[in-house]
Image (tube, rainbow, N blue to C red; front, top):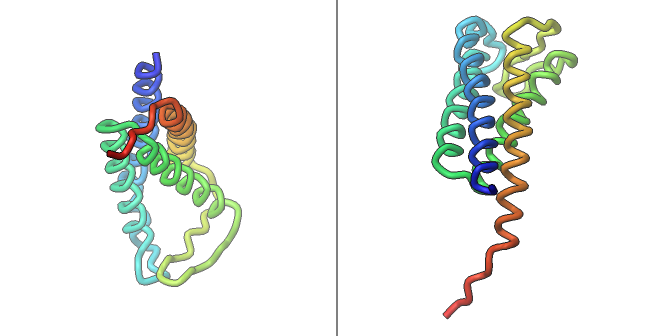
Length: 142
């Protein structure tokens, strides 16, 4: 049952990360113009998309504490930044451009839903992985 649950949550996390990656790659070209910093917003979108792909592959290869934590950090961070830049005009931070965008549109909502799905599935994977760690007998050093 534990392996079935682990794989189920892994698939859900991968779907959420895939949605996150797709929306970021799809929207990146529309934000290439925002160059108020040394890095434009389109590049940041492509980095987020690539990171989501890498983490999704890692989750498929191995479901453990590290991959679950990476899922939660990446998707949770993306969701937090999306909501932050929707409601707060943070301004330019070092090389990061001002990404304030006070509107909701369909792909932004879809991206947020994908990220939140990945966070919830990642937290479930994290709980399962930590529980399995506690139950496994510790190796005795020889």
